[in-house]
Image (cartoon, rainbow, N blue to C red; front, side, top):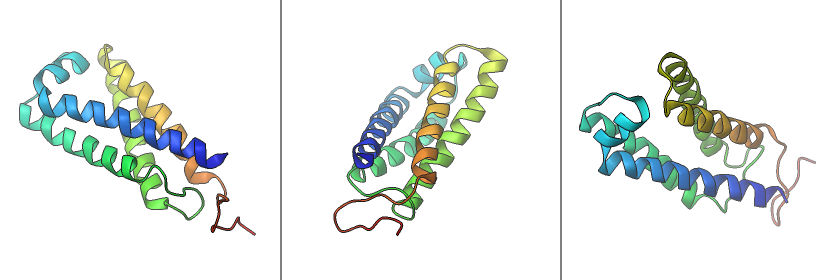
Length: 133
């Protein structure tokens, strides 16, 4: 049961991060104006898209792996850190200016919560992988 939940989390994260990454890669100016209300340089948007797309690919490729306890810890920790930084930074920006940045803040909090659960839960059980005992 836990394996299906982690697969859903990994797949959803990959799809969301990939969508945002592609939007930033191919329309960086328009995306930054929509989200923050101010334009950033195309290069900055495309550099940010590299991080989103890289994490999306890692999540997509690893969506069938075992996560929890010591299994997949670097991937889960990387996602947790990404969500935490995205959530806190976006929340601060949303409180200052409002707008579509709230969507990023909400996603960051949700992303952090999901990967916190994966990070802190006990070792999963799956064929060939023992439980914590």
